[in-house]
Image (cartoon, rainbow, N blue to C red; front, side, top):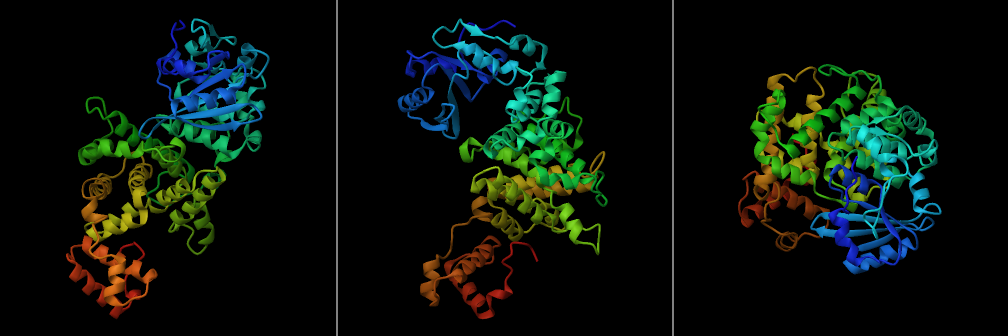
Length: 505
């Protein structure tokens, strides 16, 4: 493989702002992706000197954020806001060893053991033969103990194998297979970051199946172990764990179609063709929604795939406590939501991410419930989003993938058309009629209710405003006077007579 003679453009832009007196190399995946002609957001640098000082200096020069990743190992991170919602992470670490070649030989895989000298970009280092492995599409560890020394590298191996379409050479495969017990010693934050990077590959279903094959899936997601071998009633064609993995696969098909488009000339999937026909006008909005960044640059898309893994995680518990009816699965979504919230918290995800994951799982069955009615009413749409919020969009996509993963080989046409029609109605409200059907301008404020009706402030005011807004969406009240009359009627009849659960009667 021919080595380029130039640094990546991103690094060239950084050079004028970096300390040129300290030896520093671009290393790892950024070099590998430069060889492959791939765009890289995150870059790693090895520093023969004070890496923390260099990182802090660069952050100050470029107006970025700086924090210490690992004080003991002298690793600091710079986060640059390149444009709204787009972040670039630059990690600076002190050399691990007496020189740069020793540092590279101590790395994880040969295809990550490259370095470019920023002082002399013509000086490329490849001490482990990574360029040849990259050419041969082989994943090979740099040493016999590479994974044992840092078990999180097993997760990275799965991601790289999937992302770059590689094959693990036998010794590397053995190291990865034996990594399970050691992963318990890895910090939750590092496991989280690798898992979410796996969930960000083009179609993560393949990576998750590889994790299962290597006996690592239950190490990371122990709650899924109870789904293995769990029978499901008709119309389910698969046992619970296989169904879950099929759902991830089909969700990957849906999301890939949003991101890359649908080619009717080559496509053979009639189910997806119908999605294009009914939902095609939302594709750009859906793609933007899924790629919206949340905490620390993590995307909604990653949370959606995480949620798909846990959408049925509560089924074994429901089955165990429903001894009078061993086929019942009712309520599994609420237990699954609690399980994924606990797992996400254990992985040190942010509170907002924990809540959102729970909401996706908790509400993924709602489109199925809604399709049982002759029509999806304005009140039903409002209640769906009142409970699910922004995560309602992810719940809709998961519901589609869930149905695709229930039947084999194909979903009955009428069932699929019905589910897609519900999805279209809900997405239309979110993307095209949000102000009218989900969040209309209020007819009355809380202080006005208190003043005009002589009420004390408290939860009752919020409940009254909720009832008024729902009636407003349904077209039952259209003015402040009508809203006030409704509030008086509700107080006279009693709040307990109104459904505030968010679920249709």
